[in-house]
Image (cartoon, rainbow over all chains, first blue to last red; front, side):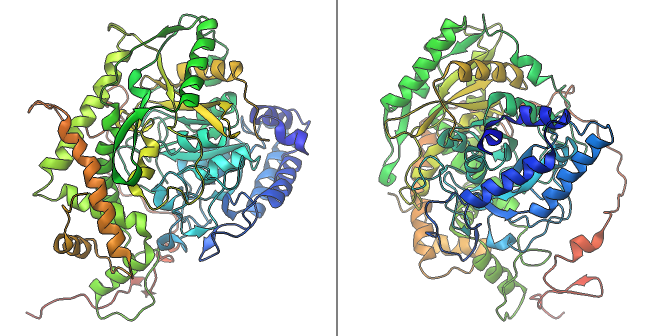
Length: 517
Length: 105
């Protein structure tokens, strides 16, 4: 069985399409593996400390639905039809996407009883391509966090490399599941780093596409100008395979871009020789936010070395490394995000009011206002409350200019940093920037949660790409002295995921990294 | 840490956000808001021209990649029961809510 689990998604699909493996046998092996490693699924009010040696990636395992899908794939094979590029590949979905007929909870008590009335476009596309959805995986409540510990569904996911540590977040269940062999692919979302950071922590590949590349239809909204769905996979090739399936214009999402979707798998075959990759000193300095004090310090030596080693390997492959690339506004990414993301979150979360769907207080209430206050007070956890309150404060009429307008102006400067270094007529003419993905490896559970500033700074190397809208990918390259995975990040031009994937493939090829499963 | 958001302002925000807070939630939330504001004040160190435009989303929407406006046409949801069935309380196809505060005219 382990041999099957170690295959890549594209190999599974090829074997299923060729009739060498059945989708049903792939699924049953995967379900058996999940039963042995995952432990109890997250649920409201359960013990956060239960089964501390298990992964706990899932909130809802939809085994019977998956069996029906796998059988449909096998029936197509028998009928001589092609089930599609993801034929028989089991995948998981971050529980921030609605899937028809399944609980779609956002990791929150306020949506714990919500059943998806339709299916999100990226999920629909994966299923139409022959993919087999295993179920919904855990996450930070409404994606608000970088460790998955804020989920109302306990126990929250644990890192497969060391279950005393967090898997990262907010797509922590997705990254943990993929790293532990619980499905080959996972559909995550990235608003400040929520795909790339957990991918780095769990030693898997995480790709945040360009904003607009993948439809947000059916994604429960958080920061609508920043949210980006994307793949988490065990290899760059599998991430490319998945991106090709989910990318492209969707009439249900007016912000999805009508840019052509290239053949990403074909792009991987191209040589990287002659591509220009930049290193920026502004990504080798980090802000430590311990105890509320913001202190600038150098990147930890092991993480810096991982990036420099990667650059050297790329140089040996003929990539031109450009040093001292200025990204001066990178350090303002988190402060600007504290404002912009909160305003958007507050706006998006007003809809949860106990009227149309979701949680309504069982308490006796005198009137509608009291019903709102009790339903929202009992239904939301601390992190959504914190975000809503901040969003309301910084966008209030008398403070908006000082905070919200300024943050949006700083966002312009962050965007300009990227435009300048990617400008084909400019001084740097980069194809990509190479940076660390995270300022640390996976931290112990409970070590950061509660300190909302320290937690937010976990995204300090990833968030600029969300402000700017550009694509980014995290690739695991090595492990640190504690045996924990470290990832490097490549950031690229608008809609040029093809070049990013091509470089990421080269990074992966040269790295001395062995997957967990 | 600053005390930019004092108790009165905090209570006003909580009222606007329509939260009934439990136990020690208020203390935690107010402390974290003020800590976050300390980080937000870093933005004041960024020199900005008065005419620096705002960016409301990163990637510019050019004509090339923008969808043309769709026809403004009503499209029924295929199964309204899937939507109405999620409401906490319904009666005869209507959503039931508690008394809405109002003044008799």
